[in-house]
Structures are given as structure tokens and as C-alpha cells.
Length: 332
Ligand SMILES: Cc1cc2nc3c(=O)[nH]c(=O)nc-3n(C[C@H](O)[C@H](O)[C@H](O)COP(=O)(O)O)c2cc1C
Image 1: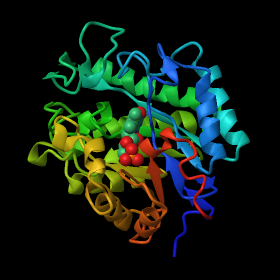
Image 2 (image 1 turned 90 degrees about the horizontal axis):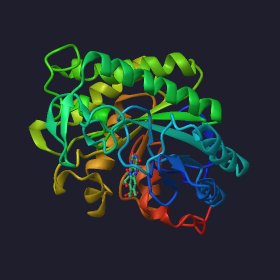
Image 3 (image 1 turned 120 degrees about the vertical axis):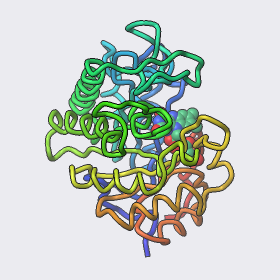
Image 4 (image 1 turned 135 degrees about the vertical axis):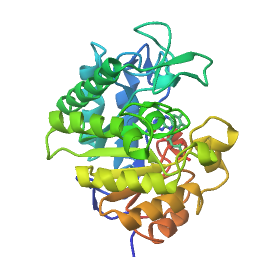
């Protein structure tokens, strides 16, 4: 029987228990593309209060990648120094810190180049911008930006990187037929739609080396029916990523193009066994790498129950950790 409070090895990291803070971007601890000084304190508080591993809020990797002007960017001059403060703060409390790397693609809000977001194919973004199909040169540049960001985070002290492949950010947009209508080598079949993720993975692996953990966070289901990805697609991608050497997979869901497909909305409805838990259980059944389940977990009993339904190795939460002491009173 798995217990929350027991040491585990997860995706190449030794953790003191099975609870993670999932990636959470907020304007309370970053502004104008860089962390505020309180960011390290927030991370310290979480790790002091029993959270074994903190996944950073999304770090935008470079050109046209930012989801918001406050979102931290790996190519900001002060990034390495501020990011290192958070890594050190977490390490001083016996925790682990994982850098989530993201490009917002069609849903970018800040443009360094041109006036339109970059996307797998032309689309009116959910923010109301005319997102434009990326050229092969732009794809190549973004792949390199992921690799550069991974190097910066590793050098600043991150214990692992997590590629954000969920929730309609760029990698998820390439995976999803809703966003990806390309007819070149990056679109069409699932294999071709996954090529961007594979290329990003290879570029990141090359700079971080074989012994450094690379995790992914991916949608089990886009939750938009036939226009989006489904569980079988996710399972295929996860199996391929396993062959390539990815170290852990966090399973979420939802493309967020309407209320029904909003990842956070589903969780509000209670995710004990739903799109989130069920998908994570199915993936964990077919891959030999560690699977983390996220979405709607709130109580110790709920989490312990879920951990023992199958092979899910750890649970991550976001909203509850608005109170960094959320699990500090949970009996060990
Ligand atoms: C304020 C806020 C910011 C978030 N930022 C990110 C993010 O940067 N990257 C990401 O993958 N998910 C992000 N999420 C989603 C969470 O990581 C998580 O998947 C989702 O909230 C469901 O978990 P919960 O029910 O425990 O909150 C964010 C959620 C919230 C509430």
C-alpha cells in the first residue's frame, strides 16, 4: 500500500514524499518577464511545509513565447540569478525544484517579432489575435529556444525540466488537430504532429545530457471530441517519449477553448475518477516511467485512495497551495 509520506524516487529525483506543487504561473511573484524577490520566499514556504517537489510556473522560452507580460522568461538578463535564488531556497529545505518550459504559440500575448502570435497553423487565438502558421525557420528557432532555456535552468540549479505539452500551449497545439492543420512534416498524422515535441525533446536532451531528468506535462484528452486529441493519442505519444528516454509524465487534460474543455473547470467538478485520474491510471498502466496525476486533489484520503487505485506514483496540486501550509498539518 502506497502512502503519501514515504520517500520515493520520481522521474530521476529522490523525493521525501509523493506530493508536488504543479506548475503555477502567477502575477504575484513575477512581473515584466522576471521573478519578483518574493518568488524564492514562496518556494521556500512550500518546501518548508512538506511539499516534496515544486514545479515552477511556466518559464517562457524566448521569442514570441510569453503568455502574459508578467510571465518569467528564460532569456531575461536577470533570470539565472533570480531563478537560482528559488532553487537554493527549495534545496535548503530538502525539496526539489523543476523548471517548466513553455512557449505559448497561438496564445502568446507578447510579441518580440511581428504583431501576430506564432502557431502551428493560422488561427484566431482565444485572446483574439490572428495567429500565423510558423515557418520552418521559426520552428527551428523555437526548438533552439527550448534547449537554451533548459541549459540556463539546469545551470542555475533546477533538478529537472518539464516540457509543457498540455493546455493549448505550443507543444500541445502541435499535437492537437484543432490547432495543427499543417501538411508538411509537422502536421497531418499523429506521428507528424508529435514531431515538434520529439524535436524539442532531442534538442533539450542534447544540452542537458543523458543523466538529467526531463519530464513532460501532457493532456490525456483535449476534451473537445474528435477535433482534438484523445486518450489513445496520449498513450501513443507517452510510449514514444518513453522510448526516447523521458523520465516522468504528468497527466492533465483540456484544450481550454470553451468552458467544457478548461483544465481547471473539470477539476472543480471533482476529479476523483474522471478525465484526470482515469487518464493517468491508463498511461501508468502502459509505460514503465513514473506518472504524476494532477487536477482536483484536495484531501489526504482522496490522494491516498487514488495512489492505490493503480500505478500513479505521485500527485500534484496547484490551487490548494495558494496556502503554502495546505498539507503541513497532514499526519505522516
Ligand atoms: C493560477 C494558476 C496558474 C497556473 N499556471 C500553470 C502553468 O504555468 N503551467 C501549467 O502546466 N499549469 C498551470 N496551471 C494548472 C495547474 O498546474 C493544474 O494543472 C490545475 O490547476 C489543476 O490542479 P488543481 O486542481 O490542484 O488546481 C495553473 C493553475 C492556476 C490555478
